[in-house]
Amino acid sequence: MPRWFSRSILGTVVIVVSIMLLMRVTSAERVELTALERAIRDGFAPIQGGLTILLDKVGGITGYFAEIDRLLADNENLRQQIRMLQWENNQLLEAKQEVDRLRGLLAFKEENPQYELLSASVIARSPSNWYSTLVLNRGTDDGVAKNMVVITPEGLIGRVMTVSRHSAEVLLITDREGPVGSVVLLQDSRIPGIVEGVGDGTDTLIMKHIPYDALVEPGQYVVTSGLGDIFPTGIRIGQVSMVDREAEPSGLQKYAIIEPSVDFDRLEEVFIILNGAPVVSE
Image (cartoon, rainbow, N blue to C red):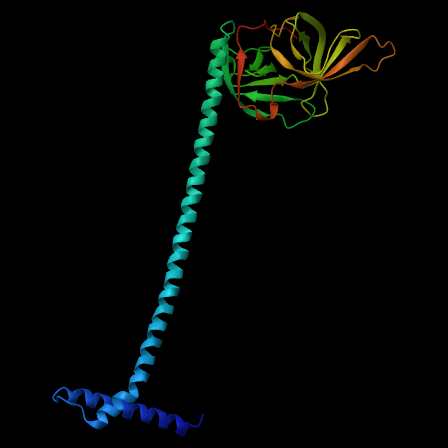
């Protein structure tokens, strides 16, 4: 755009504004406007109306963006509140689960007065697949001794293998070195066998030396027989999931795969039977 044209527009605007200001000042002292004042006012009325609408639109747009900023801030505040409520809800759920576990343990203790039960917490687990062990926060200072039996309300865990003043290492029944004398509980029949870990790093159990003609079926429960010097009678071990003949020439025995009653991966609290079987010398 030529410079002279810009200057002309600017000069025209200055003149018009000056005339309107002069009209404003002089009209205050007069009752009627002159013909020139009326013509100028009528001519600029549409322009003033357009400017008013434009300014209103600009103000509306500015307010619109300000409202967006406010809504974004409110949205972020709500997100923070939701995150806080989710965290508090998780804390409450964890506390409820802990209370439920402790209530279950207390009820189990009250329902089994024949045992002197000492509660203990799992503080470590064996990192090796060769041995299935865990460590409890109880030791000789609490009356714990070697070969004491460890259980939960769900069933048998194992026995104390080594013990110090403030901790005890437990050999789980899922270990091949921790066989348990057992019977299959089927109504009034008691079919003997030996339960031990498969030894493949899983929690699978196998019940061996079952007489071939014994009626053992999936779904039956397996409990401790009470034979031997360690495990009391009647503690649940697991449930039969499969039955098959042992791989031996005679074919006089069969075996059963046992699904443990206890979820060993989720153990947190257990019981040690203090008045169980006497310590067996090595």
